[in-house]
Length: 266
Image 1 (cartoon, rainbow, N blue to C red):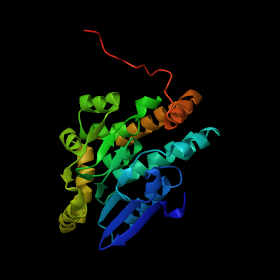
Image 2 (tube, rainbow, N blue to C red):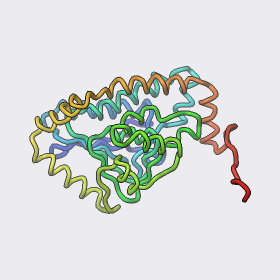
Image 3 (cartoon, rainbow, N blue to C red):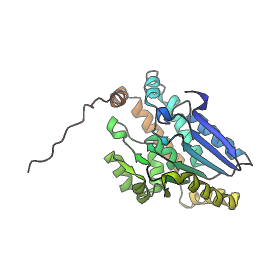
Image 4 (cartoon, rainbow, N blue to C red):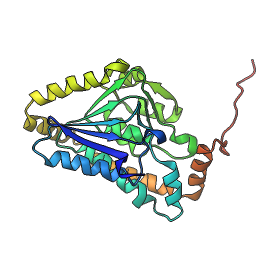
């Protein structure tokens, strides 16, 4: 993946961070995750940035982890260094940003892509966007997504999303609380800019304090939860059978545990 896999543009106090590999579904891996972390850090350290927008290129937000990269690096036992460490740093950079982060969602936001979106402060989605957590189909769990999912919805809803492996609409996402606003497909840019205008009228110090105070008020332990998630996922991905299941899934093969159910005869 080239150095343009994530784009960064600072314009009028707004940092635009764009996942820029739509031909591969704007997947995330050890090449582009550090760029996301670095760009968030740059935006936070600059006095000329007040708002951060995270988006995907060409009608895809992100379809999650780069399976080909994952399988390639699993052979060397490098899961932690090549995936879970960079992903952990990226989602915590988003979540702990002192500047408000808007996730501008259009198209697919799946698996690890949902983690990036839900770690953001404000999530604005087009009506055509599709959400999903399908990890159980290939033998793992969305460990990194869970902490951020549970900040936005109930345990029951979170479990339903993960256990069912269903894809769901932006309207459902709004009902579940994982999206803050939905907009017409051709009005995402306007909706995001309207939110930016509101944020730029507010005190930067007050916005930063709001994030800090709300965490302290609720005794938020997101960093501990993400550490636990990293341990869980690293352990799962270090099991050769699980990696083989992922490989079979992306090749369209049926897993050994999958059963074709015809339903009870009446």
